[in-house]
Length: 163
Image 1 (cartoon, rainbow, N blue to C red):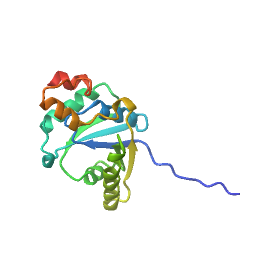
Image 2 (cartoon, rainbow, N blue to C red):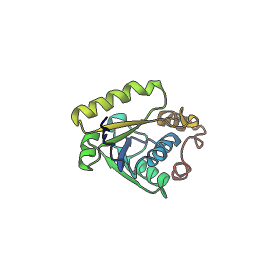
Image 3 (cartoon, rainbow, N blue to C red):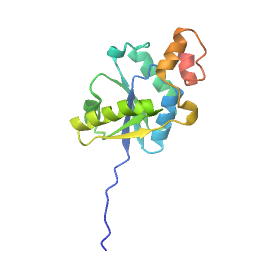
Image 4 (cartoon, rainbow, N blue to C red):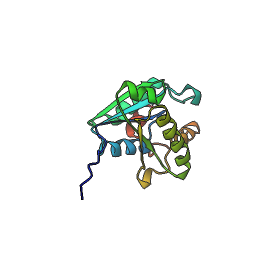
């Protein structure tokens, strides 16, 4: 029987995008997991004016840069285009998305299908954070900040220091 040769995707570079408003320990968890798979992870911070972010794009980029400082293989950049366009301009074919719970799955699956319908070369890789970060979301963090509650255990220390 002839042995089949299967091509395995080139795991060199991927994009992890989001609003990161602010970056959380859950986001950082996904970034670290992605770095175990890829040589380079581009953390793309979306402008997302329609989401009316709490922090400016410059502040969110600063949060991510400071939180990932010292991590080899990280590039942080803002963007205000379709993710598919960004991936194409950077010659990246893999998108990283985080899944905390079943509630994330349907939305992320639709986005992955929409992206691949625009560019069939794109692959979406879904990663789960560790159990301790599974409940952490930027939405929860923003709500706690709004009401002046304790949030330092939910975000990287660099975020707390910047605030």
